[in-house]
Length: 286
Image (cartoon, rainbow, N blue to C red; front, side, top):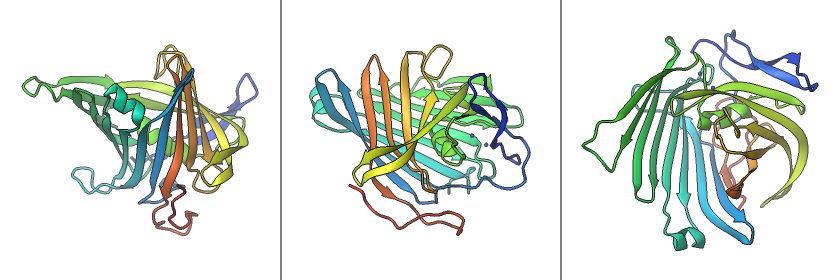
């Protein structure tokens, strides 16, 4: 989500179904407390299945730290690298090497800049979103790297003074109370468009991981359907560990395309900068 305001969800009213609705508070004086530390690295295996087909298709690596590049010096720097792998992708001749980056205000965790470099098959593109908090706007720039002589596509749209992108929202949700039965609401900007996203918090369940069965809170980002981030029909569920770090352990996405499962296979928790962050020792769970 991102300046001088802390936009933290707080219980405000009961929804029509009896759920607690979490709205955005717009006044605070301190930085948003984090449940994760700088240097955290999370690696996931991606598996696709449909009918009788089931295969590993890729790997996702998330890292969290600080930016050292201008003008984003000292902003939080979030990175997600997606790389295709496995026999199925090789047989199909599909090669994916995507990099997603978010630069986030350390005061209220609002996104300041989003950068994407996509390499999918023969396609190569660069995407940049620049957020202007004072004007509540976003400038979105796209360049086709296979046509270097062509000018970039540029559009400017209204946004929000405080907004998330897809990558930062994963981390933002980890900072929230996640009370079963509650609903978290916040704005998300993607490709220059802004959407109001709801995340339903379900019950705590036991999930299978390479480390064995672990207690996790099940959440449901409502991102599929008309007027939402993904216009097609589908569903997404994510399970976050219930300890202080709230690490995403498992995600499952279903739709007409089949089922994609993303499972944590390796983690390094990073180094906490304060005793308030209950981070353990680095370890692999492969």
